Length: 611
Figure 1 (cartoon, rainbow, N blue to C red):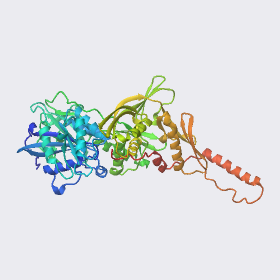
Figure 2 (figure 1 turned 90 degrees about the vertical axis):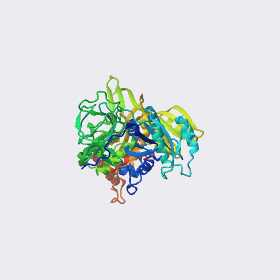
Figure 3 (figure 1 turned 120 degrees about the horizontal axis):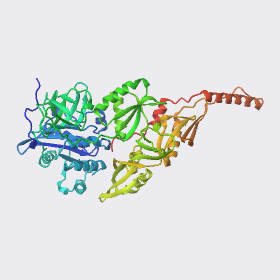
Figure 4 (figure 1 turned 180 degrees about the vertical axis):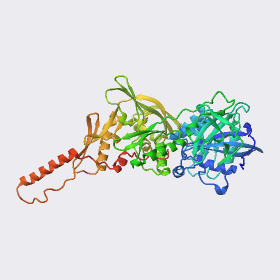
């Protein structure tokens, strides 16, 4: 028999929906752990660090990738309340997850490390929360650290949020100091959800995951009316209808209930096996006498970075397709389409939100599905207008159109960099080298500065963050958001082996950087490709113009070994014979590029897990 978590709907005035927003490594997941312990929803023996981070990769890297929601009971002044808390990711690539979580809340805890102060991603998430008119509760975490300076950073937060330094709460998520007072403040400050209990049901889908045994689990926030088991529901954007098999709450494990009322957050299961039928941002309503107006949804996530994923063993292609389809069920932001490469065989062109998203996806495919993959160098989406007026959208260098190009547009981003003021010169020098334009500069305090730049996305996705960290001794933090497109002088650099272009090594770069890319790639390949029986030229070319060249020397057999003494003409005859053989071999011989050379040449320097 099913035991229900609760039998009555919680009155909306006793519900508080909030999320925790912060930069990576500022202690969101640890604070969530303390809240789970304090409210008693997780027993002490079942408790583990980062309880809500379910994936192995999340636990290893110490970063949150998927937002998780949990229902917590809390008592204030003798009155029981229900808190719905959503723990969000902190990395710039997963801002999409954060924006969805904010839609399901009325308040946000802005968590800042008392030893580091506000970082770029904290600011980005704060502005997102302010756009959604959420109540912000500023909190300084890690006050127990020897390096903590709560007074200094309280002033910095007060300056940005627009409150008094004394209003900033101080907690230590590790030791539990101040967490109870924080939960009391959530009840006092965060407004109760507003909705009409007697209206037709309307619920916002803010996440959905795929469960192998139960199908799609859809996470919803009820705005109006109520959602109960066994009723038929309709998805308003697709018009699809389903019967609800189970409705419940997450506390922190799923618990079936007799329904969800106004303001409540929970899950529903319909037995559907395709996540695309539970579209994030869609409105759920009753099939009979349902609502006519959908809730305001989310914007669709747009891929920022494209990369080709190919199996090392070509026979794994069907397995890779199946793995990507399954992964897409849990990751709405991942897009892919089949593509072929003369060098790498069959694979997929995948779209990602950023480099960390690419790295995590590849990691998950290799671990969870046992695949061995090569990923090509990441690139962004370009728009090319030809002289005859035709337009091409280029996501892969091999799609670069031949002929006369009138204009080429590339995506640009608005970057926010926060760093100690000592490093302003080094940061400006780096940004100018990456074709950045300074948009403004503000001092957050006497020794911390915020720089705003407009930069091409293609310049950021490679090693920009690594260079920024090394120039600022690790103190700078970076956040970026897309900001349209700009015309630019871009060219396609081809890498030729023995005069034949190898599509996997082609790249679209700014014409000022073409020579650098060409020489770097040619030098790299000279070291990676084994020597052949004949000389192999490696060339970098823009169209028909060669801009760089390296040569792999031939393996030469010593044909003069048996020739001791005697006339020079004998030696020359042997050398000429060898030369003829080499020339003939070069005509029929094909340069064998080993798989390891592709992997090494295409691997970019590992993007760091923490920003």
